[in-house]
Image: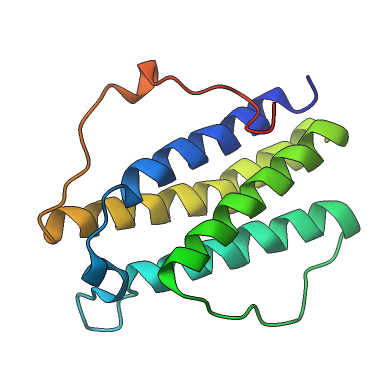
Length: 146
């Protein structure tokens, strides 16, 4: 399997993202702590920009210049899921060297995991905490498209 560790990270992102948004209340989308903090919808939009830009960079070695349209909470979630599938497929078809892979882990993939943690924290603040589990034993299958 090409890029097995990177693809496992993508599967981990998908798993943790789904846990963080599971059973979201209607008003959760626009919940904000104020003081310039992002709402869950804004966080997911940013995650979409990051994962899309990363995919385009891997494909074309350039960063897209167009601004990504902001969508509803549900549509942002769907778009993120679709982008994860696209980048998983790309990583399955294109071999990347270790230094390139390290940059993806320390940059965009870690950034996205940080934002998933923010969403999980916001869920707790609206009295909808995610169920605890030993994530090292989570049933995560490498390759979300396989």
